[in-house]
Amino acid sequence: MPILPFLRLASHFTKPNRSNAFNLFPLLSFSTTTAASSEQHRSPPPIRVALTHSSGRGVFATRPIATGDLIHTAKPALCHPSLSAINTVCYSCLKKVPNSCNFQYQGVSFCSQDCKQRCNEYCDVEMRANWTAFDDYCRNHGLKYPFLVKRLACMVISGVSKSDSLDILQPANLTSDMILEMEEEFALLRNAFSKTSITDEHIAFLTKQWYISVLARIRINAFRIELVGGLYEDLLSSLVASVEAEAAVGNAVYILPSLYNHDCDPNAHIIWIDNADAKIKALRDIDEGEELRICYIDASMDHNARQEILLQGFGFQCNCSRCLHGD
Image 1 (cartoon, one colour):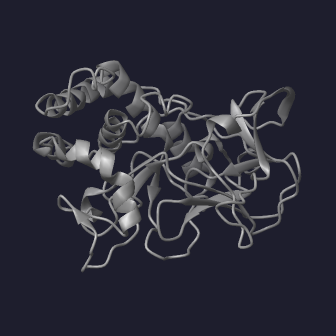
Image 2: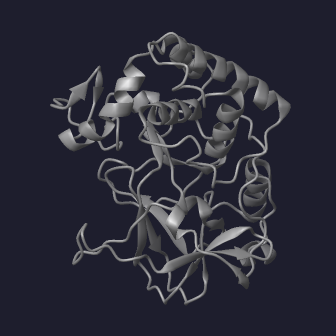
């Protein structure tokens, strides 16, 4: 598959300009919990979001962090199972479900009553429409991200999310050909809703501009969830457009993890244990004030391969220390 030209948050890595530091925490939904803590006693993660000189936003440690420490967790703002896994994972959190699942609704499965209850409102909206044409189009064209837009639209219609909930994220650069393809997807999505009993007032937000704007952000910020189901192996998130559409059990969009900049020698990484909740862990000791960086691609590739994929897949030339030394 061709690698699409994306542009992510950063192209160079520098220390933050302290005068430009700002706090995004009120805008974000995340928490850090320890074995001794509970849902009633959440502690803020040891990080802050700040502007850098040339990398846009970045995430920085507010205290020393030890190797292996859980820096924070993040629930997805949006997730959806891949078509190949839709019958084997929870329709809500992507956790593996047993063959004899007791929590089902309109042909989809949930891992628990809580997940089923959590999705009731937007699932009710989704189940009102006939998605045959939309699903077939996405399947035939190998598309995965339009399903995330569909879910967000259902969440907005049901009132559990806002139409601008992803606006904080950086959008991808789109070519005219990409936009033309998105217009066809949008027409199928809008048509599916228009044939339901949902009022025009409830789908007034669902314009072509909204669809393209949301999809542009999803394309560059979505994470492929590969380790859902109890595996505890480290995953260096890939996010490269050449990955097969059905290579993962699902895809998810997060707010805070999307603000992490790239480094080919990262000091942090993201893992998924048994559902779509992301866990960001330290790969080595991290100093107070140090920027936390993850690797967008496979860090084991050689220098030329990494540069090519980052340039073609994300739209920037990496100038991390490892790349500057030609490693």
